[in-house]
Image 1: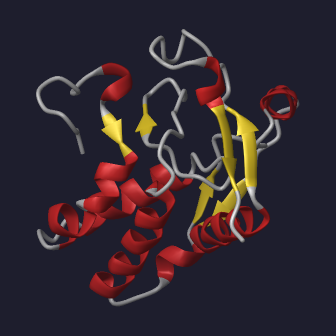
Image 2 (image 1 turned 90 degrees about the horizontal axis):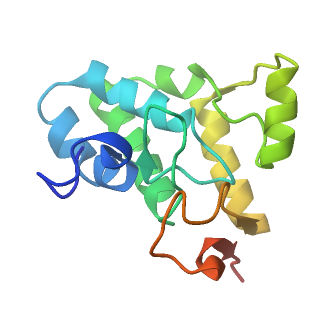
Length: 163
């Protein structure tokens, strides 16, 4: 989905996770676009990091995790997909993970070693729940002007704790 038409239709702002999954049922499922719906779930699931689904996703694998509810909309979309498809096969479908670790340095170390990690959609959902239950704390990868020149430095520090 492309939020903010016509301004956000190319480049870094082209693919919006939160908007995709808020509108998922009406855009994909109600229109019988199950293959496209499945592809959206697999694509965004493969970009899970820190227990979050990206809000902004570009082709260069430089996503932004700048919304905290995309993961919950994602889980709802999986549930809606299962209901519309009438089967749970997608929960066992494996996707190759784009990010091999939540830590940027470790991710690049593993990538240089040729490590491949695959997770099922069920495992991705479990990781979302586990991450939120234990708390999420990190600094956005590549924080600074190169990803957002309007944000103050402390805005790149993410701290989500429940309880």
